[in-house]
Length: 131
Image (tube, rainbow, N blue to C red):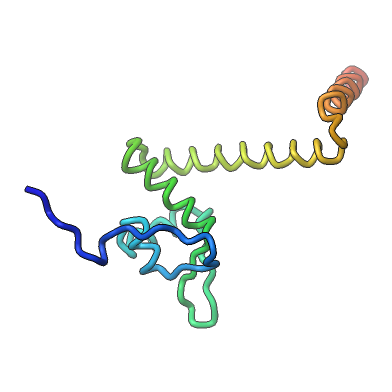
C-alpha cells in the first residue's frame, strides 16, 4: 500500500542563501523528528546549533550537512551510533589534514611538490640526529 506524503512531510531543498534553520525546518528537510535531532546533538558533539537569546536552536548549513551525513551512516549504511561517531571523527581528521596541506601549498606559491619534498628531507635529517 502506497501512502501519500503530507505537505509538511515533503523534504524541502536546502537553500544556500539562508544562514540559519530552525529545528522544525531541519526536521522537514532531513525527514527526522525533532527529538531525534536533539538526541543526535547530545551524542555527536560536532553538531552545534547556535542558541540565541531565545534559546531556540538555529542550525547552520554545516550542521545540516553533518546531520544528513549521520543519517546516511545510520539508516542507509547500517552503522551503530558508536560506529558513526568514529567514522565522523575520522572524516574530520581527514578534512583537517587536507586543509593543512592546502595551506602549505598556498604558502609555497605553486611549488608544492618541491616544497614538501624539501620539508620531508629536513624532517628525515632531524630524525637521524635524534636517533
